[in-house]
Amino acid sequence: MNREQQLLNDWLSVAGIDPRPAELLHGGDEMYAWSEKLGLPKERQLLDYMRGGQEPVLMLRHLAAKAQRPLGQMRRVLEFACGHGRCTRMLVGDISPDTLWCSDVQADGVEFVREVFGVHGVVSETDPEQLQLPGPFDLIWVGSLFSHFPRERFLAFLSRLMNVLSPGGMLVFSTHGMHVVPEMHKDDPDFCFIPENESEVLDAADYGTTFVRPGRVRELAQEIGADHLYSIECDLWSVQDVHVASRAEIPGLNSWSNTPFVRGSIDRVEVGPGDKAWIGGWLKSPAALGLPKQVELVIDAKAAYEVQVGNVQKLTLGESAAFIHAEWYLEGSTAGLAPGPHTACALATDSAGGKHCFDATLFDIH
Image 1 (tube, rainbow, N blue to C red):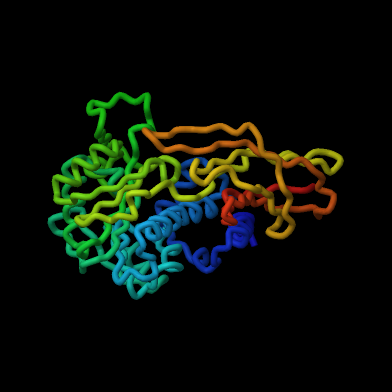
Image 2 (image 1 turned 90 degrees about the vertical axis):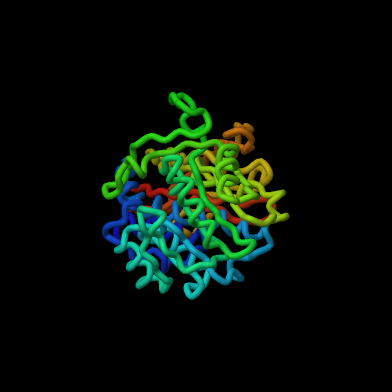
């Protein structure tokens, strides 16, 4: 087993995720390649990819619970802009493939998720007027697509997707908030499109990078008949806002809050002479969730050691999203570990008993 797979397997085990989603990966998956472009070490790329696919599912579970519409009870669900299945492989753990349709402009991605995960596949179009979707859908999930559109395409795709919602259905999509790059000059303080992207196949003039305030998203939604819009800032990947558009009121979403999910990082691992080790990093949780009641490092997916937590601060991201940020560390001995590679998984337990494996890393004993 190589180091990349070793790290991923132990994270999946500690996080309590079925390892089967990790068995197959499409060779042309741009989201996996993006991990390399970010400069991540090879051994961390699969982990980064899978963590990125897990977050939307955690968000959708929380959202569906607040709306009192459990994911498993949805009759028809569409994942639009599914790519090569980064999120799909996690979604099929909550949504039956028989009720899940996946769509993307990349035909090989659609064929891949259809064959590997057993979902329905629909090849999309770059022109929203040509888009044919087999609605109606109770839920449409669109991850990080509207974060790339100029205003007219933003409106056109929003309108097209709203038209295939069932009565009372929910269109859930994410955007970059304006807070992501506060120092950047923006001609429009509420909606800014830059013709630049990370894709090797999509035209940057139509698929660039977009920053938009929730208030402007509400205005755009109302233009195409979505009278009800609910928004949460900084709820995906720490940088994207999440919105729910619907033609009917969804009372449960009046009290919608950030997903109860602990994020964090293992920033430094030092293994010195005399079997001494120091491992440390940071964590962040929504203010409503509070500081975790316990944080542990799980070594090799077996032995758990409680860490020290300190330097707790309150943060406000975007216009109103409140979080708690803290630093943590573990200092101890590696005397019981054999020479070779070992994994460390950072695990937080919240006040309700929920488990959050927020990062993992490899270290070597010589």
